[in-house]
Image 1: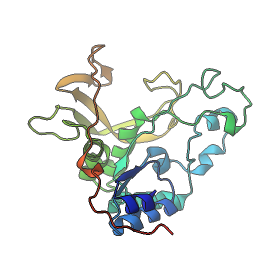
Image 2: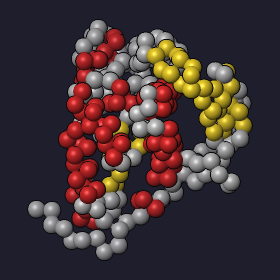
Image 3: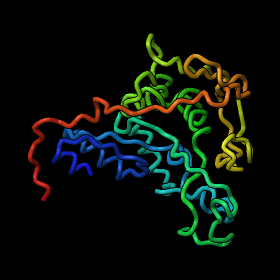
Length: 252
């Protein structure tokens, strides 16, 4: 895909980078001026492949594509985030219940290739990243905001999102940086019935959330009124504009 982007001048975004090899390819391509941006996910930053060496129902809840990797791959991902080789950390939220309606649609003893791929990720993404990047001092608060809000809004052409300034949508999260929370077995709001990070403790928790200036969450209580959501259309961002007069690079 990087070679195609280099040949055509059409920018691309690569999702779910999970290995050192993948970061090396993206790093080399960007160094050549290839218009490529890339993303990774919390389960690649905070889980390793040994998470799958658990009893069947637990491991089934952690199956995703691509799978979790080795510690060295994890280090490479953090280095790539620090260096700007990866620009976005998004949730890959793909929840399935641990029953016949979800992961075990093909039976409780289904092999892994007959189990739905994915796990809850939306609600845990920001607390996990805040804990690692701000509370533990890994890359810092500014990089946390950029990777989780500013950069994705700009890349995906979401006007009014990802920044706090006049004319933007007043989407603001106020964090309690000292609050410690341990994830429980079933404490999420997505009706999936489990939390893949159960037992993990994070420091830093969203205290108040504003959406378009309205308080939609306050001290763990959802205050949003049903029906206030709005569909957002993505525009073609500057990052996705084709490059004029792309070099006629030979693909062979």
